[in-house]
Structure formats: structure tokens, C-alpha cells
Amino acid sequence: MQQGLIVSDTGPIFSLAVISQLTVLDKLFNEVYIPTAVWEELTRDASSSYFQPIARYFEHKVRPISSSNELTFIMDYGESEALLLCKELQVEYLLIDDKKARAIAENAGVQCIGTIGILSTAKERGLISELRPLFLTFISNKRYYSLKLLNAILKQHGEADIKQ
Image (cartoon, rainbow, N blue to C red; front, side):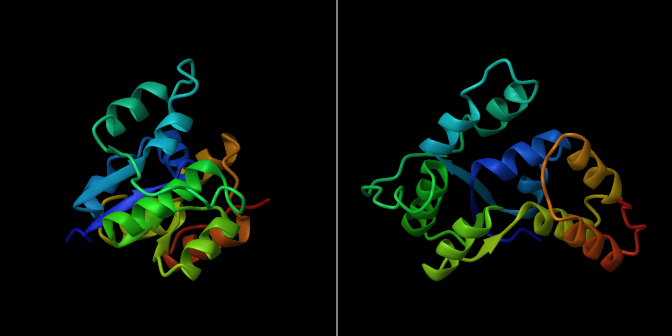
């Protein structure tokens, strides 16, 4: 069962691309969008090994914001546009990992979910068989998530924890 609409910030997209799991978003949500600022951040480096999969996946999911962005003084450009796009489209979720930006979004009444939450939900629904190999890929590719959080999620799903 899909859960409505989601707008994503840049960081989670890179994380999902690193583990080849961008399409899990289509399995969990009816529609996936990104604001123009996130598209610009994602496509800045065409030499990245993740450029092609990201560009293909998101090329028709970009939506401009219609309001003026006055949030850039408290959060980065992509995060602020993602928050504004959530409000404008009245989507159910904002996919964001940055702790400060997430707190700002939640204070604005936007329901947030992070990359690890997306993967945990995918595991619960049988869309992913194991989380541990994905988490190890994050670590080896310098995608920074709290080891305490990763191990708590692994424990919740009955998988072996990751040693430091």
C-alpha cells in the first residue's frame, strides 16, 4: 500500500543511489517530487558514478516552488525549497536526514521521514530482504548515519548489529 506524496531533500537521494534503492520510493509512495534547488544540487557533478541513475529517476519529478524562499538564512537551499514545496503541494512527507532542517520542518507542521525510516518501512513491507548489507554500504561510502541508530534498526528487524 502506497502512502501518498513525498518531497525529498538531496542527502537521502544520494544515500538511496549509493545502495541502488531509488525505486523503493515508487513502491512506498504514489508520487515523488524534488524542488528545482535539489535537482541543481543532484546534477551539479555529471562525473559522479551516481549521476545517471539519479538524473534518470528524477528528471520528470522536478517541481519549482512558487513562493519566495526566505528560509535560506536558517537552512540550506535544497532543504528550504524542499520544505516550501511540501507546503505548496500539501504532501504527506518530507524525506530529509539533516537533524536541524528536520526540526525546522517539523516545527512548520511537515511530517518528516529519513533514509533509515524509508529503508525500515521497505523491510517491514518485504521490499528489501536485508538492511545490514545496505548499512555497511553506507559506511563504506561515507554516508554518515549514527551507528547507534543503525544498530537499533537492525535489532528491531532481527538482524546482526554492526561492530565499530
